[in-house]
Image 1 (cartoon, helix red, strand yellow):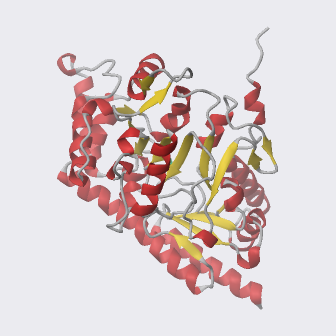
Image 2 (cartoon, helix red, strand yellow):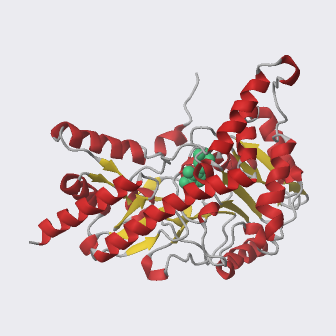
Image 3 (cartoon, rainbow, N blue to C red):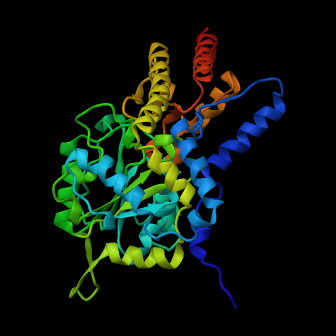
Length: 414
Ligand SMILES: *Cc1c(COP(=O)(O)O)cnc(C)c1O
């Protein structure tokens, strides 16, 4: 008899965004004339830039000619892209990596979810809270997170990030083997200063732990002092894996391409305590069994982001989204909301008025202003009492949403 992997049954029934979609649909059915503005889901709205489109067309044409047709590519990705990554994302920051340490993927979600396979199931895990749900759920699926009770996983250490601690997570007072950090952060839009990140690297080195560092929003950093990569910190090569994505950087959510960095120096101990194993080799073995590479066309598209035109054009899109973030921050602040994030990341993390619970505020905003936010509690226990707005919308929609919220607030207080 084939038995189901019952760890899947421990996951919460509805994925957050499915839950939101259901409630939004109910609203639309009862209010067919109202145009709903969604500032909820973190998908981009601006099209791919011309440099990327040109590279993709060219790659498609190559695929149609016998002499330049490409079948399966190298499992770690094409050299042209890995070299462009080393030269543009790392060397200018004084980080020396070898192309062997770069694994091209089909976006960061797959790798952030799959990476937990390369360490034993009984390692302990810790995550900043609130957090992108993939980290915990992927660990829950093999039983590492324990059971879900009262909004918390029994075997997960939560590093609370709230307004009270300025969204700076505190080091745990006990051992944690696997640490997930995401900076700039989704959902809070906050960043970690270099000295704070250094504390985590030192903790990991001291405890022989691994940091899984999600840098998906690195391109949105405006403040020069904020690290773009964990490898800017001394010692991180020995304890950290880093994930990058072109999804938010260059609008690749539908194209699919990103990369994972696993330094050659990163090792983990065998259970008998006798051998240290290189995780770069383990991941390579895992990938060559379960993954057949990202399409040639996507990798050529990603390469084009690093050309002078590509850089300028992607920067224009980032500036557009950050313009939305500024507009929304100013409008909400004027209305008396406490707004966090939105400066080095395309997310605003906002306190609900009068300490209202997140889902209740979500419903009121939907029914009062026909604007969709994401309830903070969907990202973890410390998200309760907050809501998230994304800056990925159209400028006009952001503006209109702010007007509606202002009107709604004026009506509420009368
Ligand atoms: C969007 C996002 C990703 C990247 O997803 P892709 O699979 O690359 O599209 C990774 N991490 C976080 C925190 C994200 O918000």
